[in-house]
Length: 424
Ligand code: AMP
Ligand code: GLY
Image (cartoon, rainbow, N blue to C red; front, side, top):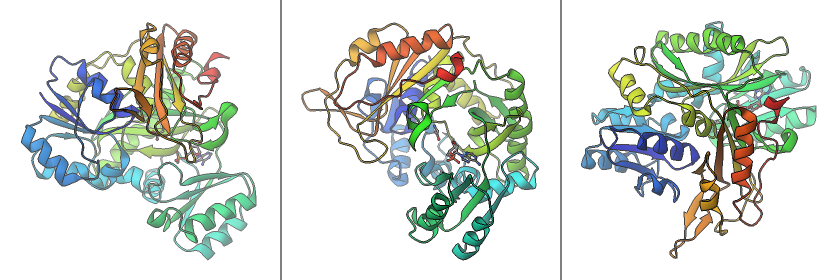
């Protein structure tokens, strides 16, 4: 079966890589992909926003399955566009992707169904929001309602920061219409974890849990990024807490979406906070695979990913055996100098081959390009995700850093403390 994967980052490289191992997979196309993805898929030069072009391509090539990576096209209804043409597609429809596309929708849903999350108020009026904010304690969290490339959330530790964030969203409109509503929510203390699950209606098949590192610098300092590194499993988090999160948050949310007439089919990704009392609470929901969570979760999946997608489309997700490797995986992201602010592109990259030759390391490309002469160059903020595998987190982490240290480009930045929390 020929497959089209939509997207072009490290997550899509990992998805294409996992699909390429399936005996049932024929040609794998990736639109637009990136230079690294070209190692496992044929690149299609169409942007993820070009629904007409993408559906026409899938029809012309008679692909048997389309898989959607990123959040923006999901929120815009790309799945509905493929379904309208009768093309099998894996991902949530627009009305279900809304759980990521609107924070006010997500918070109202959780409140209505009694699913644990931070207390909040929502506002579409700046003066009312400001008056409410002034009556609250800090720290406090200010969120733009819509998608904002991961930048719409401010955890404010001072009143000035909180008021600035509110004014940026509602007065300066730095996120455009994504900021026409805001959520002001209670600050939750604790440790974060991500649980991704294959969901089809009320059927929830959790994946291995992972932990991301969002701030750009060691010790969780500096501005938030898309994610600087991940690891899985989480040996320092009790299995009972993970179970509780699945039973009290993910399953009830899938059920709530069905009850609301928005059945979810695709990857539902819960960002969770484990409070100091050991209770999981919802921080956010995403309607897709995480990036870079996917880069550590899929290498641990023993079951054929294509079989899981097809089972979802056939309504048999509840019946398929899904097996996970006991091995641990650690992903270290190599970023461009300056990221997450502006950064140069086109910096020559060396050492990729020797990094991959280090047994147990996988290199997923997030933002790379190739020159006409065939040289690898940087082409994005997050450039590469280097994944080490091993019998435990310590072994996987050593592998990841050993391989990451073999790769060079000018100003290369990586955190040196990925997965350190799991070692203490
Ligand atoms: P989000 O885009 O909603 O995942 O938020 C980005 C990051 O902000 C999260 O990964 C958390 O680190 C932090 N965050 C969001 N909401 C809260 C909250 N209520 N309390 C503490 N931290 C939060
Ligand atoms: N790594 C966080 C995300 O994919 O949203």
